[in-house]
Image 1 (cartoon, rainbow over the protein chains, first blue to last red):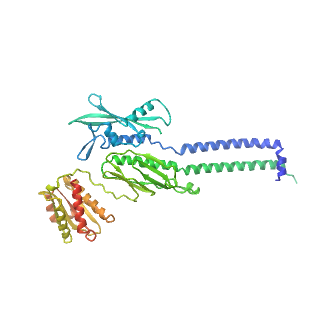
Image 2: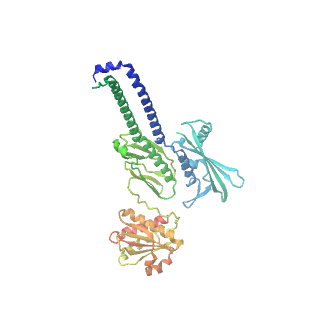
Length: 177
Length: 302
């Protein structure tokens, strides 16, 4: 085909319209196929790593399954027995010390099983807890938001020399960022 | 002869060419898209930094010695990535005092590392290090957490039974069951004089010659009261010897009563606990063994 022919054929409006109609269907189908491809790829390929729940579990484990608040005797830690001497913010912040305080915060309540009353309350990163709790309860969505996870552990707590049955109620807040 | 409709053919050819161009563009777009997904190192940097940091959180909280062998081999390398000539992922990992940093290839080539923090503990120190190995070992020894790139960890965890005590009241006895180990026995007796000269019959260290190229420390498996003590002492001696001879085959295991040795069977009941050391005398010297036992005793009684 010569250039001259091409120019001449361009003037053939009837032929162009005929093939344009054919092509419109093909182009439309192609666009739908492409759209489907990208949707499927984005649906099946995971590019986001959501560790919020895992982080909350880790915070809970760091507090409950370690010597952070648990009773120690002769270097042995008795998991499940809360030592009230250790149940304070300073100690918890030293034992679970995040370099970026916004990473996680938690509130711990020790409930006596006999009367069901909250006897002792302490925090991990209290200042951040107050901020994040307000944010989480505000109903805001997106990156600035935070999620509250709650956990409960039956424990024995040591008050002086007497042991009592209780429950640790933990609210852990992890920012969504 | 019938003449062909050339004008119609030209029109059709134009559209076929145009369609081919569109198809080619679509193929290029799809290839770039797939390659972009397959070559997404940010995801894997984020994945490994979060995984390692969260594991370190657990290791720090763990009581006693602990190690995790962590394989970072490129699991997504398959026929697609090979066809697209995408190199396998290689990372440089930095363990800092409170975070993991993951760089693509190396710190010199990647300006945008991914990091993830872990919580520190006032009683635990973190040894900073970095590696480009795809197989790393996270460990906790005593109150120190670190990262090594040895292929397989050989950290030995001993029973955590509290055995602290006053060494000055203890008496340790050494018994040799073979002629070759008599020299060892006298050396060890001299060394133990420096740690325990009391009157309480505490432990019996029995020596025999190994018939294989390995050294084995047997511990009491029949007496449930003393098993943990015996096992802990055997483990501590094994650990001391392995520090001196990391490539040697040194194990600890329960004593096999079927191969009972008469004088040992009578003597051991007079002591709180015992261990039987089957020594490879061609490789372990008298000084090495006596030092190892002395150090193990000091560690055992705190």
